[in-house]
Length: 249
Image 1 (cartoon, rainbow, N blue to C red):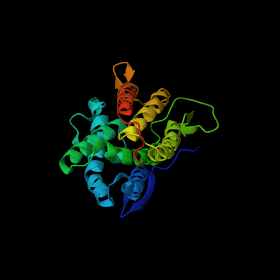
Image 2: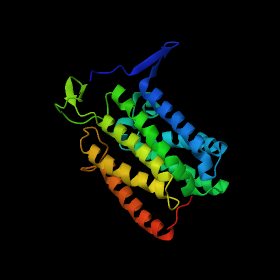
Image 3: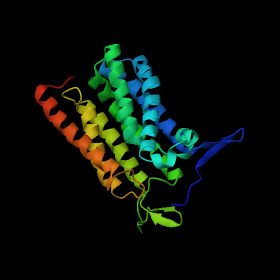
């Protein structure tokens, strides 16, 4: 695969980056999917839009803050660098943590069952990730080490693993699987916990191929947090599954 052009198009001399186009597209389509499925979770499209207008900005801020935190030596003292997401630099784990935390707070305020909402949102989150990951391709970032595989991409003249592609494919398959499981869920929280388990498992192994990982000392940050999330989701899945034996619908 050749080196891509990061610019999608230009309006009034302002370059619109593929990175932004793809992330926004994933969010909009994911939101539409949530709105269509909302009645199956006793929610309305208005409920979903109320959450989206708060949780999406919170998720973007969290994703950026998380990335900046782990690159603080580069960003310290330069506000423009910190807020310039056009240059790339969003960490999905930070976005998920901030977005889900915002959703949990709103659920408490608006008297909505949090795990029911998160079960509804989980497939759309996976879908948005599958689309948004292609932004890494156009930015020539988040790639793996050298490889001679036929689907390698070219970065700085070298053929490397397209780790964005591996994650994009996995997240799309996860989206389909979670939709299928949601029709069969036996307890609230099952779908979001499956998302946490299966995304964390994939991310741990794909992160091992990447060459630009955020680090915690000698360890790759994404691998550490993936292990933690996997363990927490597994414990909760076991606990919740013993409380509810019958399908919800």
